[in-house]
Length: 362
Image 1: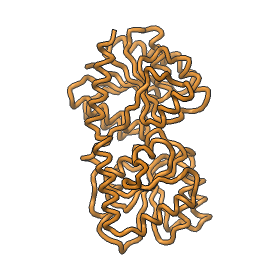
Image 2: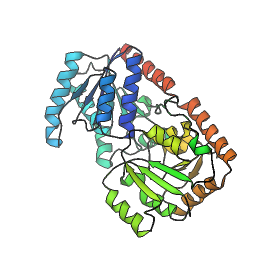
Image 3: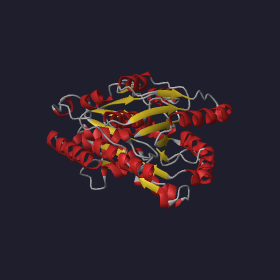
Image 4: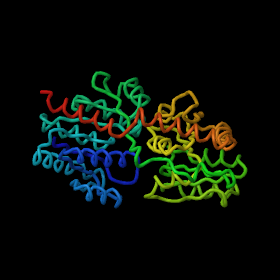
């Protein structure tokens, strides 16, 4: 099949990572795939990965809202030139633009994926509602997101499905470093952009209640300076380290003892599943998708309320107090759950079935 993916932009983020990974797998399976980005890509890592896989990348050149009409014309021209069997758009701006193209090219077979529980407020929700007739299928990446979009009548139940992100359990696999000793201070890892959604202030406040452990934070974003000031004011400079953007996240998972996510909301929580696949004990907030990933039994990780530093600190402390054997058991249960529910090859197969269904639906 000829499949064009349309994405808002190509920067470091979970949605972008998943899109590039899906394209690589689809190309491996013999499909003709291409990625169209509304704005110029900023991640050299993703650009290089696409080039290595032989996947074309096309840039529509948007730099502001003023460029929307021109981007719409460029996207329509590109899709008419290559005539893909299916167009799959990702993230709110790309979803809306791809829907508008169908006003002028109704023969397009279009599936739109929302990558978060909330995609930017009431105006964007209304834009989705107004353009819903132009999308043959909407998907979200968690049941929590699906419930939100359908419950608030943003999407229609009749053409909305949940397809979770897929995890490459060969790439994200356990290492020995995080399970071999109780002698060094416990090392926590948090991964994600430094933005309001991730609620790092609550994580830093919770971490300040722990005595000897260390916290590594991988990611970049506009809140870096504010978070650094919070760390300094709490006297935690020697125990918390900001790593910036890392291209070796799978290696980082193997070098730490536990993973923590403090988000206020999440559509899925890709990094949670990656950490679980790496057999790390995880502590996550009940922020949507992450709660679904670990479940509510306590066998795959610990779930705490959002914006509750005390509860987050208590859960992290309980992991730190565990014996090595109990930590291993928790991590092994976590990896087993990811392999059963979120294995990448199975998710790619689900997408292939959806594309075939759309292609054959007249």
